[in-house]
Image 1 (tube, rainbow, N blue to C red):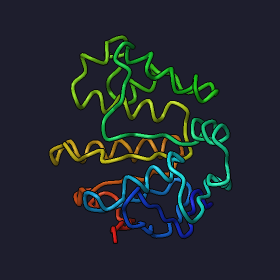
Image 2: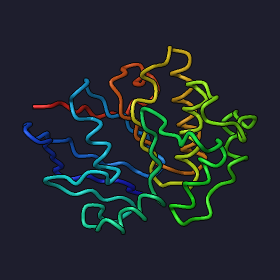
Image 3: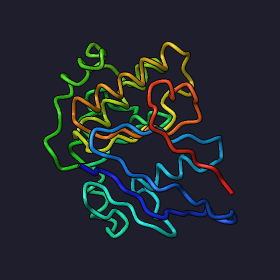
Length: 211
């Protein structure tokens, strides 16, 4: 079943030439790699797919619904329920514990969500549930970021450069973790990266090239 489809997407940042993006068709529970050099526009594409930016041309359909035709409030609610975002930097709220950070996702998405403790156990960091996020290592913070993206059981997981700062062993662990969790919640997975190593784990890919 078709989960995601994009058609004729383009976007231009102020004062820059427009970037045209390859069309994407992603079936449910399928993984896709979006490759591109720094500055090629691959993170822009991720932000378009997440509905954080509006394209100049083209359309995006997720789960049979047109993201590009939604207004701000509709899009916020749809994103909260249907899209799990993993940013390059975790963006965790420092005053809150790990578990409190996870509970924000279902609160804003207005869904019941997963059990934070069960999810943290699944990701191997259950012992950090009541810890301040300030005490986390880089790897632990990344796993918490992944857990937060999974809390609402999204239909699509979008990960921005999840392996860029990792050695080969840990890069492989993170990609396998993302794939396993996508399968567990029956979600599609898109990994946006310049890291060619990820092609060893996700053979389905498109390349983004700036003009």
